[in-house]
Amino acid sequence: MIKRVVDFFGDEEYARQRRRLFYLVLILIVVADFVVSRQHAEYLWDRLPGWSAVYGFGSCVLLIFVSKFLGHRGGLMRREDYYD
Image (cartoon, rainbow, N blue to C red; front, side, top):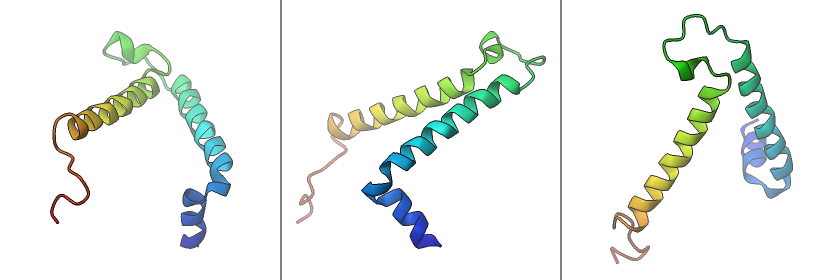
Protein backbone atom coordinates (compact mmCIF):
# COMPACT_ATOMS: atom_id res chain seq x y z
CA MET A 1 0.00 0.00 0.00
CA ILE A 2 2.72 2.49 1.01
CA LYS A 3 4.74 1.60 -2.10
CA ARG A 4 1.82 2.66 -4.31
CA VAL A 5 1.54 5.99 -2.50
CA VAL A 6 5.29 6.63 -2.73
CA ASP A 7 5.29 5.67 -6.41
CA PHE A 8 2.33 7.98 -7.08
CA PHE A 9 4.07 10.99 -5.56
CA GLY A 10 7.57 10.10 -6.77
CA ASP A 11 7.36 8.72 -10.30
CA GLU A 12 7.26 10.99 -13.31
CA GLU A 13 4.68 8.82 -15.05
CA TYR A 14 2.04 9.96 -12.55
CA ALA A 15 2.78 13.68 -12.96
CA ARG A 16 -0.33 14.35 -15.03
CA GLN A 17 -2.57 12.57 -12.50
CA ARG A 18 -0.94 14.45 -9.60
CA ARG A 19 -1.51 17.76 -11.36
CA ARG A 20 -5.16 16.92 -12.00
CA LEU A 21 -5.61 15.85 -8.38
CA PHE A 22 -4.02 19.12 -7.21
CA TYR A 23 -6.34 21.21 -9.38
CA LEU A 24 -9.37 19.22 -8.23
CA VAL A 25 -8.51 19.75 -4.56
CA LEU A 26 -7.86 23.44 -5.20
CA ILE A 27 -11.24 23.86 -6.89
CA LEU A 28 -12.99 21.97 -4.09
CA ILE A 29 -11.42 24.24 -1.46
CA VAL A 30 -12.54 27.39 -3.27
CA VAL A 31 -16.05 25.99 -3.86
CA ALA A 32 -16.31 24.96 -0.19
CA ASP A 33 -15.41 28.51 0.77
CA PHE A 34 -18.48 29.77 -1.12
CA VAL A 35 -20.71 27.46 0.97
CA VAL A 36 -19.51 28.69 4.38
CA SER A 37 -21.77 31.13 6.22
CA ARG A 38 -20.26 34.60 6.61
CA GLN A 39 -22.72 36.12 9.08
CA HIS A 40 -20.22 36.34 11.92
CA ALA A 41 -17.19 37.53 9.96
CA GLU A 42 -15.30 40.19 11.86
CA TYR A 43 -13.34 41.80 9.04
CA LEU A 44 -14.26 42.82 5.51
CA TRP A 45 -11.83 40.41 3.84
CA ASP A 46 -13.30 37.49 5.81
CA ARG A 47 -16.54 38.03 3.90
CA LEU A 48 -14.91 37.63 0.49
CA PRO A 49 -15.44 34.15 -0.97
CA GLY A 50 -12.16 32.43 -1.75
CA TRP A 51 -10.15 34.80 0.45
CA SER A 52 -8.72 32.09 2.70
CA ALA A 53 -7.56 30.03 -0.30
CA VAL A 54 -5.89 33.05 -1.91
CA TYR A 55 -4.35 34.13 1.40
CA GLY A 56 -3.01 30.64 2.10
CA PHE A 57 -1.52 30.30 -1.37
CA GLY A 58 0.06 33.76 -1.20
CA SER A 59 1.49 33.02 2.24
CA CYS A 60 3.07 29.78 1.02
CA VAL A 61 4.60 31.48 -2.02
CA LEU A 62 5.95 34.30 0.15
CA LEU A 63 7.41 31.80 2.63
CA ILE A 64 9.21 29.97 -0.19
CA PHE A 65 10.68 33.17 -1.64
CA VAL A 66 11.82 34.46 1.77
CA SER A 67 13.46 31.15 2.64
CA LYS A 68 15.20 30.99 -0.76
CA PHE A 69 16.43 34.56 -0.28
CA LEU A 70 17.76 33.79 3.20
CA GLY A 71 19.41 30.62 1.97
CA HIS A 72 21.11 32.05 -1.10
CA ARG A 73 21.63 35.75 -0.35
CA GLY A 74 21.56 35.64 3.45
CA GLY A 75 24.47 33.24 3.69
CA LEU A 76 22.64 30.40 5.41
CA MET A 77 23.19 27.91 2.61
CA ARG A 78 26.63 26.33 2.26
CA ARG A 79 28.31 24.32 -0.46
CA GLU A 80 27.82 20.58 -0.39
CA ASP A 81 31.48 19.95 0.56
CA TYR A 82 31.62 22.75 3.16
CA TYR A 83 32.58 20.45 6.07
CA ASP A 84 35.06 18.27 4.14
